[in-house]
Length: 132
Image 1: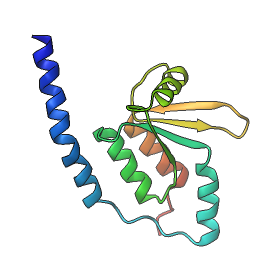
Image 2: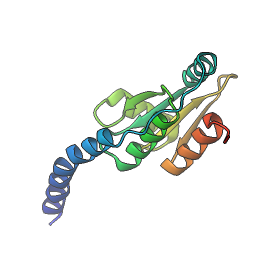
Image 3: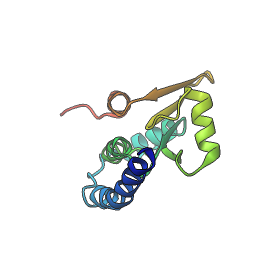
Image 4: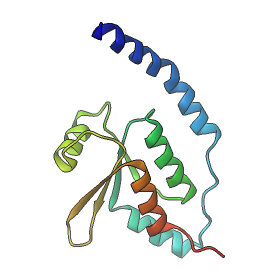
């Protein structure tokens, strides 16, 4: 019975994955417009961040959409098909759960944020533009 269930979910992922990616592509939010100096500062801050993710994970898509909305060039690392990224995720966060945001602080310490809602809240707090 287990192989049948696994085959069902694998087939479901194969069918729904491209649909989810198409929806992500078609519903991309418009990015925040900052002046050149502010955007350069944001880009510099984003160099200390990396998002471990799977392409078709709906929670990862949610985080990527927020990154686009906030115009954040955060490095995306595929933890599904890249064994070294998956190993780094497992070693750093003690799980292969995605999405996971790796934050390298100025002092060299590393924090790992898991859960899409937590990551989105962090990005909005750190990079969100004040309401006019």
